[in-house]
Length: 414
Image (cartoon, rainbow, N blue to C red; front, top):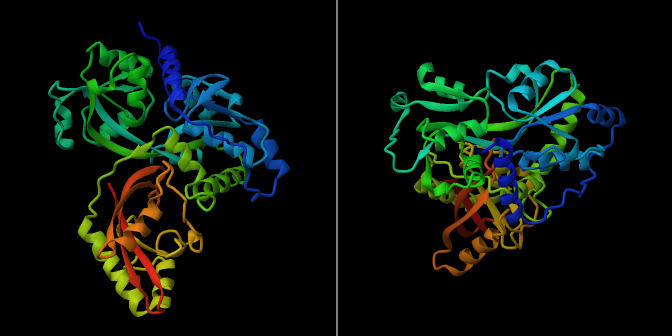
């Protein structure tokens, strides 16, 4: 019988074999070291579980998105701890401890309405996509929530999977709890149950770690995309929470060095890249570029101010992921309706987290195409959410009212 520890040890080796070297030793020197907060941070007990690709391995030798992010935060905040100080537990044990024991931290945890007031939070760290998984070709058909009650679902006891299914209207009698991830997947592989509810990002790693071909299984339905956080016991000081959150915000947004943030590189390293359908269409994107281009052509200074203030129509009031931005011909951002913090930064030769020089491709297409327009695909962050997403952007070269050339862009996530 496969054991939970063997599953994750194999998954760990599979990931390490394909990862590039990533240093967490750089410091941004933006924080004034606070000896009192550092002492408090070093006194905490950091709890985790095996939950690839976010946190997994064995005590003293852990990896994953959240583990690396925490290690970087330790280094940047002068906290004399490393991933070796993380204590590995079964989820149910760690979840009880972080509720009952002062000075404890548990990660990675989905933040939801039920848990919100139970802990103090730092994040988000990364997205977590809960899906229904079954063997391929066994005839599981779920088109909408109303179809869910046709089947039984395995879940890990203590995970939010059960609550998510109940929220979708699934009968409690259709939900079967298993003690841990190993037992959950054993039940699926032994055909004790036809469907499980679990993380899409973790699924392929776990199946490969069990010697199975991930292509023999499929995600047949998306339940919900949530965000993962560090959850602190409520005894932890608000000052330390703010200390960690400020440091996390910094590594989420430090794109000026080479075009992608520290967190984006970690997410790409573990292939945490999501596809997310939205109601935004190509026509909506093109229309926003045309509107922004027309306004820049007639009133450059006024339009730039409105864009950087995130005013409508340059950022959609109902869908914040629909926004426009503009480069000069040196690929310096001159206006951005979603992230004014990067205005004035030059992105020439700076790739996305996967290494694609998408901004250089945008300029090349704008200069070389007959109409000065086109589309470029790349990976990027999404407003108000953690994680990396597939994105496609439409661009148009214009001459603004100040007589200079610019490239106006907008995109949609896909």
